[in-house]
Image 1: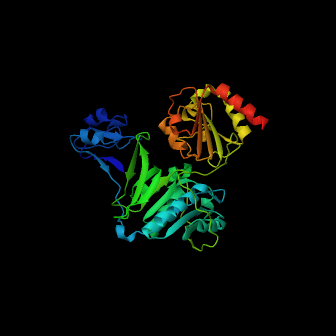
Image 2: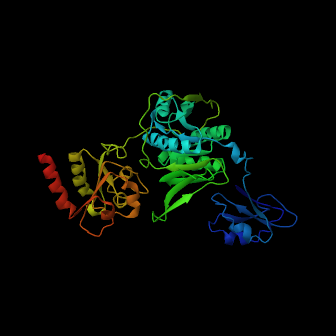
Image 3: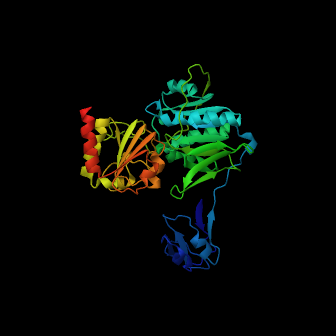
Length: 406
């Protein structure tokens, strides 16, 4: 969208200036700007920083300010869209686990819908990963390889996926609610004029209308909202890591690989200079079988040494609640919860974590949950399989001592 002032109408009255909540409108002299006008000496200028809120439009008595909306592209009828796609996220040439999880759920949904399941793989030198995607449930893999796609950047990835959608017209698209998925799923949805449901925890097919039922937590996780995209296609959803389980790979499966060529069309205003890995995580949090997480009850950053020692004895990854991360005690990649990672280890130990609903969203799928908290009424005990009411600085050293004996 864009905003413009009609100089033939503007009288320079200044009502738009007083109405602007961002102070980006000024009144200038036509004579000073060498723009003489037979009727008026002043006019309004909208400067950089305008958010297109429209306050000035309604304030102008002469209708001299206009917001022009971008024209929608002509859309194909809903009936022309068919098939379910999974965006196969890759890093350093290797398909990420979240893509395999989505293929597992996608296979179930595609079978119920009676349509094909396709994976979209973007990268450079990633053809070897196509077989893995087929073994995990894909009927077809759309492969786009280009040096510009080796590392994720918003613009080329958005350009390619948007082009594929406009060409092939899928009915549904699933993407991981990862850093990459969150970065450009909304850009793609905006480009193709469709809706997007983010951070879904459940997906299903409406048996009557064939619509994708997209369920996600709302109001801090206090209710679960099921959303449909009835009038636009494709229906798009992002899903968190570890929400669904991947299928066991079937090496006998056969599928089709379709290469797509976008050479000469890809450019980006940003480029990757260096990839810096998080050296604080000795064990990958999302793939760990055991996680020990610390929260506000740890007290201060130095006390996370106890959590780290406990995790080392167990061969576990270290997690943290949002309170601990916001306090600067642990880096963000360790955060578990609605605004952090979603994990589903075999064993999750919550130490000094009260267990607000936002934290539970990220870990309640764990096979076994052990809570250690001195408050017997802490919400974490509502989801824990085992609870220890006590001071973590007494309980954890005792557990470490016993574990070291064995």
